[in-house]
Length: 479
Image 1 (tube, helix red, strand yellow):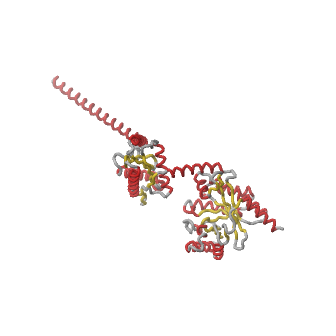
Image 2 (cartoon, helix red, strand yellow):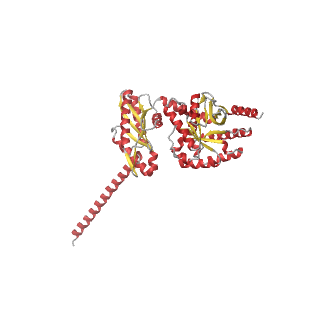
Image 3 (cartoon, one colour):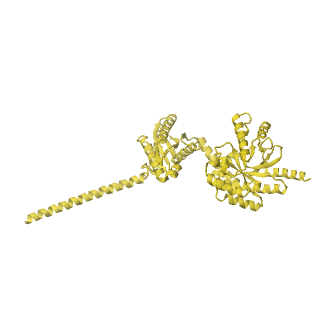
């Protein structure tokens, strides 16, 4: 083989190596660009849904706010979207099922907005949507934004995933607010949409509401009330009232302890306002434990005077499902040297629709301590009557909303009669609360009601005042 031939072979090999090197370099650079592109995408997008993330949304929101300041007729809208019942999806199918629903919801939102609008995932099951320039007047912009919100909500409600044969829909609660000249604070805008969205949740979910100042004022008032209630615990602002219970002969047979709050500036705060508040801010344990302690102290005094009355205490559902509650009750009874039979724990029937196994265990343990258990507000909720068979109950209390319509409302009258008959069949006492007229009283006693309480007999009074009356009666009876 000649030198010329070897030279040509060498050049061909070198050319091949050059081409291979060039291809490798180009491939490497392409892969590097793809990795960089992927990294940039991950930096600015949510990894699960591929929607723009919080940083992108914040930047876009700032841009729209700047435009709104310069152009008065440039009115946009901000929406906060939160999926209803998302926890149920995770509970039913695990986080993988929750992720599937989030991906489906994100696709629904992305595919049904304009190119100039921005939807992002803030985290968990919350999305934000920026609708750019939806009107040139606030009324028209608000109308357009609400129309879009309702359309998206309907589309989300049709979006679903299947978990073990059960369909879960991306039903949502949506809060809205407008972006216009004079509105500059992005954080406050998000806060406003969150308030509006929470209001939708409070109303049952599945709707759309605009933020308004009344919502904010209510939230701020509630937050102040929370702080005031926290400071009131352990002070004379919180005090215990008593409403006695009477049999058909007019003799006292027991009494119910009722918590009261005398606010220093607002006056008397209704229990149906501050009790739910106490549950939300986790003060209900302290208040319930305090009421049990007051009941024990009062029962000991009655016992020493030879009065066999039982005292009823309202027990929060949150306490009944607490792991240390039964232990606290036992320790308190031991400390006072009080038989458990002297106390009645009133439990609202609303608790029966959840945590029934935990409730049953706690009630059995309380019953073993001698505590009598009553169903409060019976007839006002949605309890399964079969639970009466399995729970150690000794008393049913007819809800005052039924009592106060006797005898003029046929339904309330019939339900009250049924409760009394049910109590008789199950060998439970039946007490009617909220009795205000002689007609109500006579009707209930004619049906076999065991005892009554209400304004007809006595209004709630401070514990000390009621105990003083009982002490005087006991001294008079003993000569």
